[in-house]
Length: 237
Image (cartoon, rainbow, N blue to C red):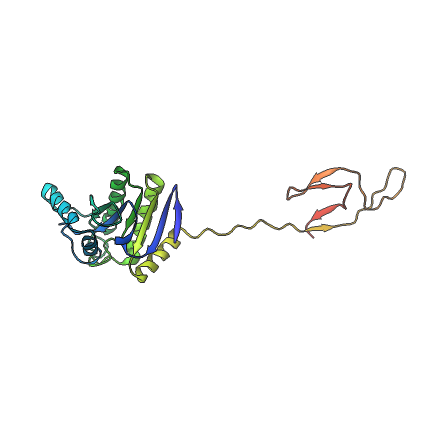
């Protein structure tokens, strides 16, 4: 499923984020950047120890990563060249700033990608695992912020949401359809023309039947009608 936003593509795919051939993938990390379960653990396992070494260096230099912020490391053995690590909010009912923090995690990740000249970015669904953010709500926050970023800031060619389970994929598809409905096919209106009879009487009193002097007129549909070659036409009944 895909939408074009500005000059970029916003894409939903079901699959494994560790296999994405993009410039950078975004990892839903924990504040300590030490790896963990779920997608975070899978990324560290597939990418190898070089990722963890760079994460340790970041934490040693600047401390734990606050929720809503992002940092970048090598992609290690992954097809992606780099990994952006971001921390999403823990769900506490939705009135503790969770939507704003989640939007910040996506926004800061995209800004970091742009600052490094990375054009294709693949995200996992942030905070919808052990952090407990309801996926239906998280999907709307994610897609709204991604679309806003592509329209207003730009700098990337594709934002790809890589969703592991069919349930998460359905939630994101529904959210995207609600936020950006599929374009409806436009069909040109049909004009129905009916022939009417017209008798024209010349100055000498001679009836000339349906034939009228040669003179072109333009109908409502913009088609030129030659009165010298056809009967008089009228739109409607």
